[in-house]
Image (tube, rainbow, N blue to C red):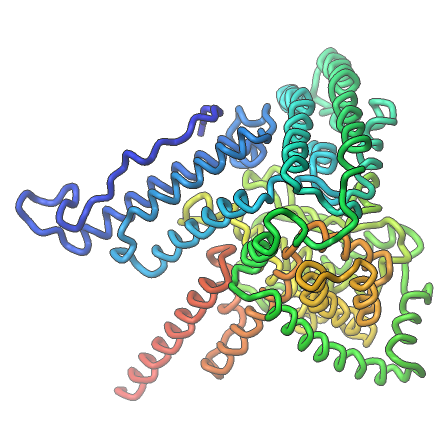
Length: 613
């Protein structure tokens, strides 16, 4: 596929949906049939989906590269106010064309797919309206994080691959300039972020400015080049890389750092809640809807969190009794945080531990799943420049072309904050049966529009990740009480998010209050808790999705077990839940309810056939 990477909008407004009585292809003078109407609507939707997909790839060359668009290999995405307006116009145009169709003429599944896209478009448009674009940088995300990591997401097999990367490096100054434009516009409009969310950003930038060119992450692809490459090409590419990094990349990083240090960070606010953005309560309400795909209020979520914390705390107290620990919850947690036997001394041991857990998990997957992804995955440390401000771990999915595996990134910084008893739950969440299994399967979807493979609804994805932790016992994990306590601690962590995120952004909690609540109710180390609370401050609503999504999936499992009884098959349940990738929770529930009904009807037919015999 070859796309022209211009910023010309796709003009779809000229498409006029046909009524039931003017179906193209129907014989003159004949009334259109429901089948004709359905065909017209589905054809129109297919065209809209294709235009939407082409627009996504045209505006996101990194994603386009992952999907085989060769010319995109040389480009970085555009940002800045002009691109935001382009995004707004494009999403609105696609939205209006879907709404012009009569979706009652098509099947429930096809209609829900169209509704899924309209929800995504609505959410994107509302996000622009409330100002999400004006805070594109903090210690966990922004160009100072993703640009140095760019090479790790690419392959370098020949001269062209290296030239494509050099072309992208040459666009780094433009990316940083466009980011600065958004920050300046945001400051002008009053979208000033909490100062705590910017701590560490200057150090992240300095990590690529201060070292010699050859010591930066940007130079990584030129340290070890393909053995089949001609020597003169190696020399020329390395020389060009040094020039581009020294003369363009590092000066641009330095200029951006100076702007942040002298202008942006000094005006950052000391308050924490997103309530202090100009769009106020609308901002947090949007974030809740965006990440949970529900219409729950902040107060409702806060209450759910309190109930879950109480339930999990009771289970944790039982384990403390089981191990005959003499002391209360606080003393037990302090024991876990300070006893060196619960921690690795060497980063390599931590990584080996995760790899061992993942290998054992791989072997147990067929117990719970009928369909497994083709793509492999591996375990890597979070890069040193990012690790001090990063969370415990994260996952990056494989590209569709199979050129790289998925990667489970584990934080090896400050090993005294990475307890061994939490490793099983974390690995199951980030690798298998969690993010890798779900996202790799989604990458490999067939028979659905291309945009569905890249659709990420946080409540579904992170809800699945947390649900996957609960599958550990059936897979042979959590065999000792401390590992079971670790699994409960991770579940408690996500339940506390419901309280803390809403506490900060709805109830006006201080950072210290949020940290204290988490320390008092979990075994998480202070380092992890502080990083997490700063994440909630900088990314309102996102942390709510984990527990909200997991609770919905657990409720679906319980409902299916109850209604199907002895006919319930967990492998078939999981396969159906994962078969169409990420979706909003209400659509997921409807899809699984229809599956249950189909199972019951199939069983009734079988019973009837047996009785007739």
